[in-house]
Image 1 (cartoon, rainbow, N blue to C red):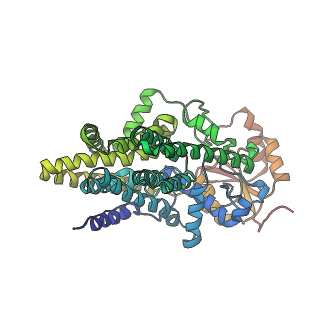
Image 2: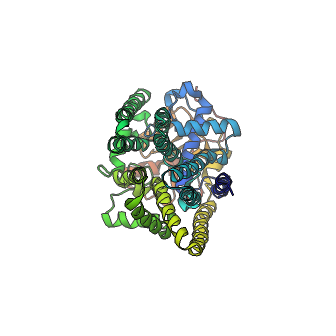
Image 3: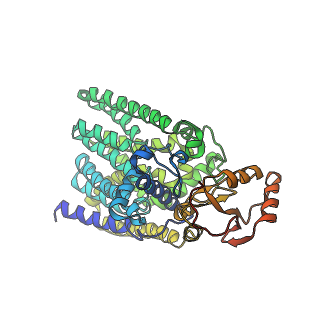
Length: 491
């Protein structure tokens, strides 16, 4: 059987696993649901307002709002939102249309893992690496995850490695430029390949100089663009820029209240190691990690492609090492380890095939079965949860009506509601100002049922309890500020 047929079969299996329940709604309690709802809203806004009005920047406000009220998310470059918007433009605004974008990049990464494995090792190494990459739980769970981090960045980083290996310098630069439009970790690969070119490929030293220079210019251009789009903190999501986000996720400056609705504290070394160990046990599994460790030892002893495999390993490790807070909160930030782990494990598989074919066959069947079970069971858990507040608000409110909220609402609820929200309203003055001078006819005021009012909020609670009728929906007290109306922007 030809290697192309085998690779096609691997890709088909990988697509089926990543596409499992691809139309499921964005769940309220996991990263897939958060990223899917958040970036689908950004994509919807690209189609709603157009590229000129958004200035190509991600707009995170929900409902139809005037341009001067747009709030931008400029912590990451805009290409993931633009890509999902393109998919929505072709297929319509659906959950599966958003997920198909990262899914395509994830499958492309499987092809590149095969190509790198076949070139630095053998076709057998490439095939084993592709098989592991297609079935690994990290790929099943996050292969269709809508987020700047993950499949798109992995694909372009691998494209950089493969084009660099083939001395296709222009293609490598193109992969850098496009990949950087998705997220920052592509620039680590730029630096690592530059070092590799100096140490291992002396005739590529000019290219080694060009790569980091292009990365620095790209980052400087984006930061200038972000300052132009959102010159004041009020126009930027969370009031933070990319530099401040780097400081937070690296653990240097941890503000517990940075993420609305979540309290994040700096973990101890033991807590950090324990959580990452749990992530890796579930998303990579101990057998794969052991095979990868053995493969790394084999590669270091005799392998001609050790340099490029080391570059891939360092690329995955760098993101976790530079941003330990990010890796602690987001299990999928370790996805960048996947290519190196699969390639190292494939080297071990090749060695086992030469020595004990029967043992390898049993191990492979058991490992792929374990991968499939862990990946699909994780998806199935999130499939049981659905946002309820958002769809109800969408059905209840007219397009021009909005919602006031004491605390920030879950992004999945705001996405499905698709109505204007003003959160953080916890003082009488802010409440009355929103009703008198707001851009919208605010119909409801939402307060979590389990929220215990402190002294600053008590006057507002007394006012709304005394003035407005109240009912409950899910976990909220809903105060009805106005009767149903077709609504619209205030004149």
